[in-house]
Length: 298
Image (tube, rainbow, N blue to C red; front, side, top):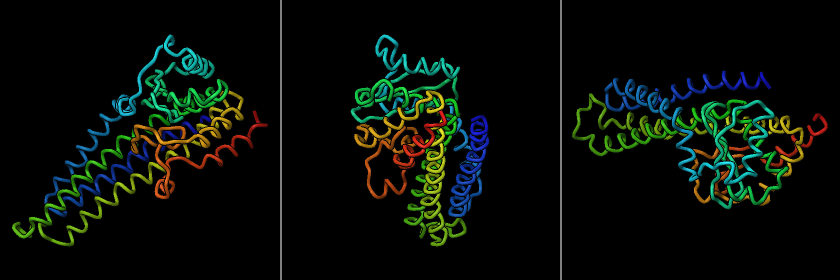
């Protein structure tokens, strides 16, 4: 477990470097397109500042985008006590507890570290799960907190958004460059069809590469959080039962946000071929099988 946590911290640095490279590629493409090499520097500086802001603010932004509200112990003693007991059991600081008024059964954790963590459950999952199953779900979310997945998720969330923003700007610049290229100096790259193609290709491929990194990170973290949750409760069957219900009663969230999809315990988006191809979560049957196969070890 401690090796997994350390690996997460190392992967955080690696992923930051990966995203910096992607942003540099976008800046370089814009520089080629317009013949101005300061664009690369500004792209790196701007994206870095944006990522730092996201690192500190993305937790609040995530709950704001989800429409979740913070609760007190008096407002929902059932959920609060389950989270509180798990925090005491694991020696983890008590996270802030949120509820999202949404009939879709789901839950997520966010924040930058265990001292600034947030766990959230939908009203749908509170109605669907027994106390035992809900404990398994929240143990899974607390596993994300303990494993520092929430920090990694926040960085990925911020940098994917930054790359999307830079790529969108580059796409628009490439389009207008092509539209007005005949009136511009060819030495600046305006009107150069090769540069135009390079700019558009970079604008399309960089977000795709960022998404693939995001998916790889998310899928492995779900398996680890399942194992951490089962180790905490010593009851892998409870989480397996909860996952089975999430599969059988799955429905998309009312307020969907693809940038947040990797944070949830189950895929919150509407399913389809493309969605399955770019799924942020491993298949639930595989997760259930792993939990039940490890049941005798607890």
